[in-house]
Image (cartoon, rainbow, N blue to C red; front, side):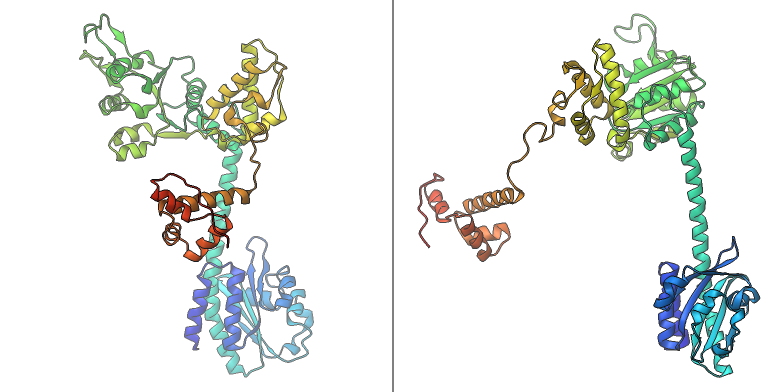
Amino acid sequence: MGELGLLHEISDVLSQGFELAEAALHMFGKLSQTKGYRRGVLTVLNRENGHLLLEAAQDAAQSHALTRAHGKLGEGLVGGVLSEKRARAFPDSTLLDASTLCDWEKQWLGPRTEREAVLVIPIQHADEGLGTLCFTRSCASEALLENDLRFLALVAGQVGLAVRFRQLAKERLDTLRQQNERLQDQIQKSFVPDGMIGKSSAMRTVYFHIDQVADSKTTVLIRGETGVGKERVAQAIALGGNRRGKPFVRVNCAALPESIIESELFGHEKGAFTGALALRKGRFELAHEGTLFLDEIGEISLATQAKLLRVLQEGTFERVGGTAPIRVDVRVITATNRNLEEMIEAGKFRLDLYYRINVFPIYVPPLRERRSDLLELSDYFLEKYSRQNNKRVVRISTPAIDMLMAYHWPGNVRELENVIERAVLLTQDGVIHGFHLPPTLQTGEASDTAPRQTLQDAMDALENEMIVEALKAQRGIVAKAARQLGLTERKLGLRVRAHDIDPRRFRTEAANGGTPSQVTRPQV
């Protein structure tokens, strides 16, 4: 192979995403096979402390020890070459002065009982020293060694690009890691809003977002499954910001009929429609200078969405039946458990309104993603409903705790609250036991309904049922039943005999119009 082809292969190896040490070993192997270079070593300069770290060593016997060693810039044979930034060839290793060698260089070169040449090439990128490539080879003429140095300088250039790329990637990763650690530190030190329970990392992120947005007038979209506590998050934003003490008006858009939702939001003038006997202020007016919480925003009609968009953009609206514009100062918080993006694609939600309400989204995690908060929530609800029902309930038993932790909670925090309230009402001894929990939370052991049969028994029963159904469908013809089940006729025949099934029975049943008949299986 020519040198140009070899350089191309080395470039491919270095660009394939291997770890630097792994890529270097691949490169050492190719250079050893084609050029006769032995005992390759790659060192990389640590720019923080000036140490030359040994990244890879070709000699397997030395690899473990060498990769734990290091030298310094300007120290020893290799450190001096990197400091001078000039490739050097030493024609006879036995003539090297041992006093000038570092400890790792002595170990690398060994006892030096045989004459061999030593090649050391600095790795550079834009005049910056990054490390070195080191090899030994059989003794050769000065001209041949110079040719080796020229070729290895090209190889070092390729390695320099790989080293620099990995340095930049590591620096970028370290920066991102530091930023993430600072963010997590901020989250860990952030406040816990009044009425919010849970110290999991998922909830800490929610608290951090509440803290960041509470004092602004920014429109917030709270997303999450049913029962996760979206209204509690909205209340924490309203009561934790500079609008505390101002009106906090809640509107459940899903609970209002389409015929009256516009009147409820914007109010109506006297006589605007049949039954409008007096002027009535809408929720926007009632929330003036405060906060309006629109729950289930995905349930409102397209016509109402258009009017809502105008209020959010301009801060003005007209009452139903009125013409005078009314200006309000309202901070709007919306919430939904619907997938608004899918609704937009289906033409059921306005894209412009989506952009207007999705200024600051907050995702509230489901209970299954914050199981570390489950016991704290359970204790809170236990105390709440014990006090509310004048009962002394002091604890939850260990089996009941295990059942609570094992359940998947599709109804989230709301379902947990209902479960604890029910258990408090049922208990008679001040302890919530497993049998006080609903049947959906019961385990096989707690309810004494654990399966008695083994897995093999269950599989045999299923196989028997499928074979019988196939034979019945194919009127006892084994070949057709085998094709239906995706088996060969021989395999099905073996299974039929193993389950003691007589296919002729199903032919007789078919002939009798589906009425079972007694058929004695012939002796084999």
